Length: 79
Image (cartoon, rainbow, N blue to C red; front, side):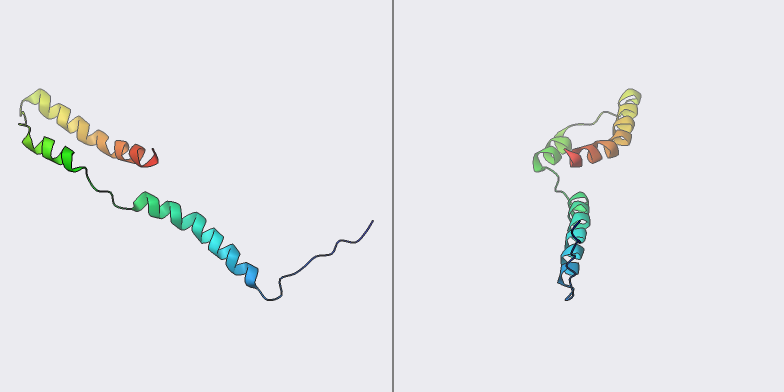
């Protein structure tokens, strides 16, 4: 069998490509996930124009919807 010949990077330039690639694999997804998002201007106007009901059933529904919002925000970021 013929001997295997290895080539070593004596100048060390390949190391920087490795570090750059590894950082890109970490930094780009983290930046995308935590980048601030603007609220839609139309949604803000429609919710401010609506009259809000303060009966018990509506108050319970509003509390339920607020508790459900964080999971919806996470789902929207992945879609």
